Amino acid sequence: MDLEQFAALRTGEGSAALDAAARVAGGDPLTAAATLRSAGVPAGLAAAALTQAELRRRAAGKFGPAAAGMFFTRPGLEQATRQAVARRRAERLRAAGVTTLADLGCGLGADALAAASAGIRVYGVEADPVTAALAEANAQASGYAELFTVECGDATAFDVTRVEAVFCDPARRRAGTGRRIFDPNAYSPPWDFVTGLAERVPYTVVKVAPGLDHALIPPGAEAEWVSVDGDLVEAALWCGPLAEHPRRATVLKEGPPVNASGSKGAPSYHFAAHSAGRESVHQLIGSGRAEAPVGPVRRFVYDPDPAVIRAHLVAELAAELDATLADPTIAYLYADDATPTPYARCLEVTDVLPFSLKRLRALLRERRVGRVEILKRGSALEPERLRRDLRLTGDQPASLVLTRVAGAPTVLVCRPSAPRAATESPWAEARAGDQAGAEPLARGADGD
Image (tube, rainbow, N blue to C red):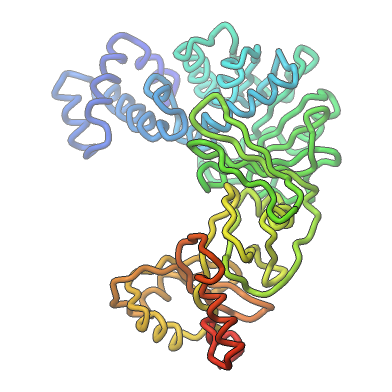
């Protein structure tokens, strides 16, 4: 889209074209274009309207119903912060007493609009003229034009003494190609400018890619990783007075918070709260330097949320769950109890085998397993190829965890966790069998 096309969409004719495009979006694009042209919409306007209708449809997952009245570009939508994440960030800034904010590289305005909705006066700066125009239109459509204004210009030239806080989301895609940039020094604005903001403005927040190298985290900053319903979506650096803990994993989920207090007297690093929306916010904090204890495979295996793993808070979660690692380099946790937690998925382990395709195939055939989900960490196996090689024919489901235990390739056969009395546990049966000289249920764990 260029400024001329955007201006056409803002006319009465353009508004009618957008309405018509919304009614046919999501179907065959050629049929949709023909429908608009048959209704008298010029070809160029029809193409622009259909593009916006499709982007609005995709944006609903990030922005909810508000997406229906907003304007987007493809790269801008890809980098835009989800509404739930932006809202939580705005709430945290407002709780810190921030009333004025510069959004340097504001893009389409997702974070700025969330801050404005929290009562913060936002000054947005955007280098791309089309994106800046769309951000301004989004402010008007959302009813925050008085709280969020946009200027098209160089973010590095903005006078930050005008505001109490700065938020910066540097562009991580190349202009024109949309290809991802993995070198922070090639971001726009560049990394040295971004990290230098904290020295000029005490209240500074920087949105970064989830794969950020921990070595790049500025001294004294809080690094936070955020997931939404198990999808790792971003990381952020909180500087100055905003830095409360060295590392934070924030897990957003719909519905009420899940109680994840520490078990068996373990210290609790967890706290949860409702945000202004439907989702609940669960936060795990810690140093990011602790190491979890190592032990054997136990009755339950926990697959930590990616935010917990990237924040290096697996040890803190292990303390919550009274759990251990079976391999110090693999982030699966093992415990004797199934403790409800928002920070990990829990499965009950029924069998532990050194990996052998022949033996695994035989075991699954014996259990009449015909459907498997395959989780992997620390394994070079390709899940889809393994699924084909297993040649499953049964009617029962199972979960397979491909991993390493004490450095050895291992497969865990699992089922959904369901806390039961210890006497009902297959692990209890296995221990009893050991004592009686029988083969344990976790067969194969001691070799071929």
